[in-house]
Length: 313
Image 1 (cartoon, rainbow, N blue to C red):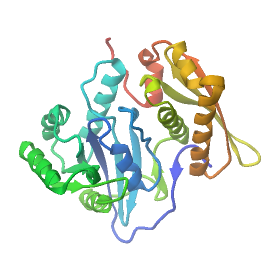
Image 2 (spheres, helix red, strand yellow):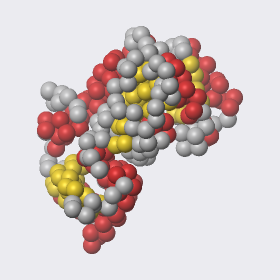
Image 3 (cartoon, rainbow, N blue to C red):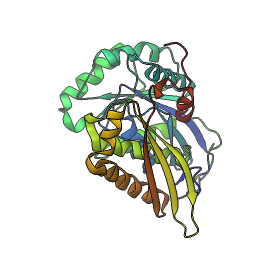
């Protein structure tokens, strides 16, 4: 398995091709990563109930007949307080400005709040085809959904409105079709069997971080990260992966390890199983937990995540 990228079955276009970037924007936990995975058909972006889990820009590549749609799953946009948060929000808006199509995802249960209202004005300044996507609709009555869509459209008109449940699949095909028809004619930018431009090392680190959040819930502070230190293919076809989990205090290190090392064993087991399924090879995963105070102020960590390091406090 080439660790450079993630692959899916290939398909051949029939006639002229189309291609373009679609930026998925929204407040934290709006469902951007879940929708990205549903559209691509495989895991390319981590999903967690913990807010702001998407940090690096993850691109999922959707093939739909002659169209190649590159989904840009951006970090959730919110009012940033720390340096890492500022870098994430800046990155989201930069990629929105560079995209060919914009999609604003709104958690239907959460509705129209200050975070969404704050997104609308800068979004209106970006002249691109744009869609409003109400997510998690299985939790809300239809009359309330229609009222919410109308209210948001009054504040800023959208070219198209979708109501989806990425978990059940409802409405996802309609979104895929619109994206495919809206991107412009042009050559594909990626091989037809590639489903993400993220190096497999990066995706493997993101999978481990997801398992860590899911296992530890609110015990683990948001400011922790995972990096893949080594990726070695062995003679028997299996892959040996070493990763480091960085936390900021020794008390956090103890949380990740768990009593008798039970927490880190479960995280490793769950991450190993998912990475193995994706790369279709046996995986030997070794996790190390290190305390690095103020890692979120280290420019090198930002480069690892593909973010610009914001100067200043």
